[in-house]
Length: 270
Length: 313
Ligand SMILES: Nc1ncnc2c1ncn2[C@@H]1O[C@H](COP(=O)(O)OP(=O)(O)O)[C@@H](O)[C@H]1O
Ligand SMILES: [Mg+2]
Image (cartoon, rainbow over all chains, first blue to last red; front, side):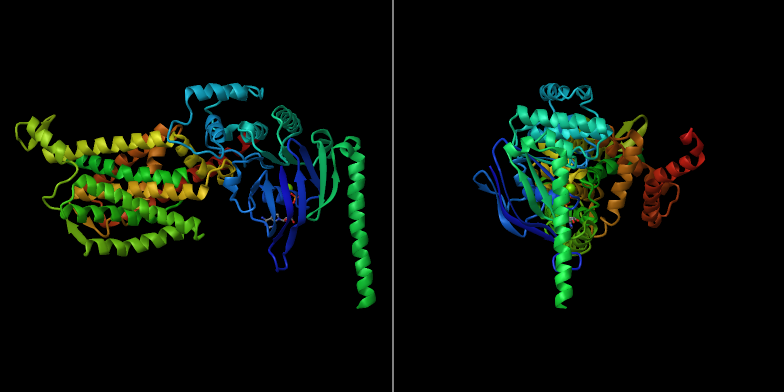
């Protein structure tokens, strides 16, 4: 369904600040699968999701969704196929606009926006019904600016918005990381429910090993812009948090070892 | 009475300018300086078309479209060529100064004995009052002509305010407002935010040019200098409107902008009557806007300083 073929991204190339955020990454995502992405800070998880969503155009490689090659589509055009929730709970909604207006924006994601009234009474009833399922009491506050809500409430609404029209692919980037534990648990539960009920294809970056074990059915581990481990469906069923931590250690030790070896070689030859 | 009717009329005409700037400054949050140039553009185009025999309505429409074009160009400088918003506006405004001189051929075009958009109501009024040219309202004598212009301004202003209100509530208008709030979100919802900025600046400057077109007809001339300071003027009006009625809903915001523009014009008319030197007008306006921008922050700091203890309690 999603096909990422050898994409790379280097920030500030040929300068002292050069960062090779993605190094020749390839990844296939199956229709209806839910993939978790873990990795150390700065390992390129967000950059990978941004490359797929079109925030920037990668230096090389190609990206396909179904039969569409989307590598050179602009970000807003890809939104027709992709729903997103960001780490920052304020990034996914327009603060000064009402809950209803925000949702109406999402009801036409990637479609034309005609010159007809956006928020009608009929539409409000429809919105209230679906927002009511969040059990947050928001259905009575549809006309309030969304900026008056808590981070958890906004993130739940952003998730609802990203999936209001069924996306071909749902991208979640540490969307519970900035929330208090209670809200985080609630949004995680909601995520899992929506993805299963709507049978969505999803990728979720997470900082929490437990979340990676609990929610997705595949775990991809990234390190320094590369995929270093990939637990598929069957393997993943047996994986425990301790295993993931061990793998982290192993990857980091391997790297230390690599570096010390190269130091050694340098010393010998220079 | 004439003073008041005059101030109201100019206030109504300039409220189109303020409504235009509401779109750029408040809706998409773009500090657009093109305004000074596109206001004069509207006036100069209308003046030239009217003296070459065009209908004043058609001339005003062309002014609106040319204003749209100018605003869109600013938008293109900003989005396509990545020029900072202030600089993009300054470039456009500077270029428009020459364009306006080119259009008019000289710095001032008088519009004497030419038709204006208020011709029709004037004729109706004259007919109603059996051919008189003055009318008595509560004992004040008012010229038919002034009254006619006043009435047409009310009609045009309310019509445009209503259209703007309806437009901003549509799906398209909602996306426009969201663009000023959160461009990241707007892109994630599949809206081309750059195109939206270009369109909004176009619409904004179209209204500004229309305002210039109507003012030229009202005052009976177009002048290449008439746009100078109009941006600050519009901003002052918007700020007054917000202070008057707030911005709790779209309808209230638009109403506030119109009331703010009229009130500001009245204040200026009164100040001039009391002997304010017209040369000092722009200085006074600038100081006013400065004060309005700084005052809320100042009062908040003062409040915090004096009531610090109550926050800790
Ligand atoms: N827009 C950017 N400009 C410059 N450097 C960036 C940008 N985005 C990410 N990086 C760098 O790329 C690396 C990977 O970042 P990121 O993908 O955000 O990591 P994470 O796995 O923590 O999400 C980091 O070193 C980061 O500093
Ligand atoms: Mg990240």
